Length: 246
Length: 237
Ligand SMILES: Nc1ncnc2c1ncn2[C@@H]1O[C@H](COP(=O)(O)OP(=O)(O)O)[C@@H](O)[C@H]1O
Ligand SMILES: [Mg+2]
Image (tube, rainbow over all chains, first blue to last red):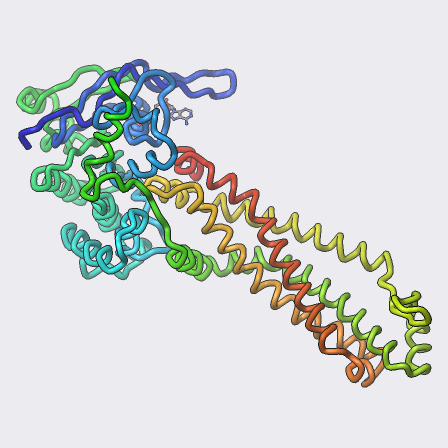
């Protein structure tokens, strides 16, 4: 990747939620540029606004003020069809709770985004099996989510997120519901995707295991960016505080 | 900055240029709906139950009427007087000098009421069924589903439920209607029953049930399909 343009740009984004008379300000002005191909972690304690930011970047929710650009297109300008197209082709989503469709098999879950994209059934099945192979679950393709472990479900979700070869994979606490070892495996998988396929990975997390693999870490606290650290700065942090937190 | 040129920047990055449509072919929609119905068989059964009952009642009433019409048309005075004794009102028919069995206003109201109650029951059951599936809806939207895909899936499911439920209801109600007629009037009830009357009554019952099922699901499905993905995903927790 020679072309390290900003694939995502967040500009002055705030988000408030009305809870009756109360207004909760989840994001209080976030500016962030994310380079194409990087592995970026958004770190912060629970309630700091990571998921809210994740939803804004993914076009799943609209900022109260400010703008989100994907490939320099302001996504607030997109109509319903373009937004669906964006979610379908440009971005792959991974969630803490896996969010596989329970009534479908692993393979059907992976091929669903391809169906939406108009890929012929046979091609979709072939690519679906390939992707399941990539996450090590090729022979479990006929299983329903209920018949798979948490880690396996998350692998299927990762395969699904790659269905239409998106430029960006967004992950919200992808290891949040997994035990230590399974979490490490998922992180290693995400890292290899970023390395081998050049996918931009943006992951919201409070899992310190994620620090090792990140190119950059955005520390967020109370709806604001606290600091942004590059990989080499991170090593120092890790040696100091990080090691204890593990 | 020119908005149009930046738009093209985003959408020409795909291999196939500016093909920015998302699709869900009808066959695939059917596939998914049938699957959903199979997996949630028990829940579907509950949703359909009130429909079966209401359609059965409708078919029962219509066929009772058909039996009476058949007896009246038989031209046998003994049967006709038995009809009157059984409490059927004979009203002047379309042709001078002919008579037909009048559907009593009471019967009509009971049928309409039962259909209304059934409609409310369906809306209620479908609201619950749809609420249970908020997460699935949100997930589909994250994968690129349009509102119309979600709406179509729910309409298909309800349509199939409606057809199946109405069919069962019409058969049950129809058979009961004829049996009751035979209990009252014996063999002639069946003998003089006209096939086209029966077919029409069954057809109407099934159609009414089918439409009722679609009407019942339309509000819940519309709400669900218009829900923004985040709201849908959050709802279940
Ligand atoms: N839909 C919502 N309605 C009301 N408050 C919300 C909503 N979503 C998030 N919040 C609030 O915004 C803050 C940030 O939440 P969130 O982004 O989920 O944090 P994190 O993902 O970092 O744990 C929290 O205080 C949360 O209660
Ligand atoms: Mg969160």
